[in-house]
Length: 116
Length: 110
Image: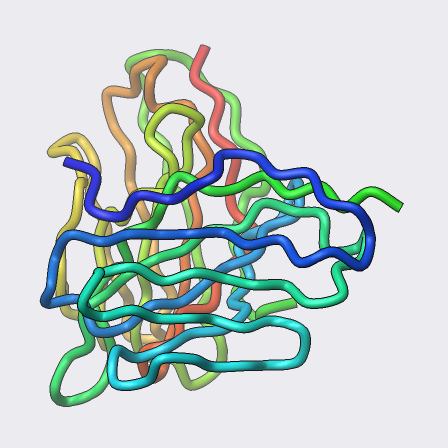
């Protein structure tokens, strides 16, 4: 059972455009939603994360929008650059009350290409 | 560089064999997570250790086991290897809820 569905599978955007990647989750107990960026041959790198009590979070050119009632969240990349070309993963997890979190459930990933 | 180190970088072995993957977490991180990344299954959580104790289990096969040592480094043991175990294996560490991934070990089973 895939608990986090991510779309699109691949995306090509012109430089300066705003790629949008969408994710939907099933488990309403999830309370932590990070995005990771992965370059070929590298491990996933934490990009930005959001909790369900917030509808939007911005960090630099990256923005997460969160819709709790629809169980959906998305990543927007403003003023995209060729260096942003990578695979992006959304994830969902459960935070422990005493600190820390459970293992993450990942989406299948979006291969993003930013054309110059 | 996340500060998480993994060895070896590459591992090639035969079916039926046993291998050990090693992970050193970031300084001060008590939690270690293991993940498997393959083309068909994507990134899957295997197991989590916190300060030497198993804390959570994901989709880990019975042929796989892990442990975390007093110095907080962790090892993932994979036995009776099958062709389908070929994948990238990542460990991640955290002090709170943010998980930082290592560079991974690419396992090829021939």
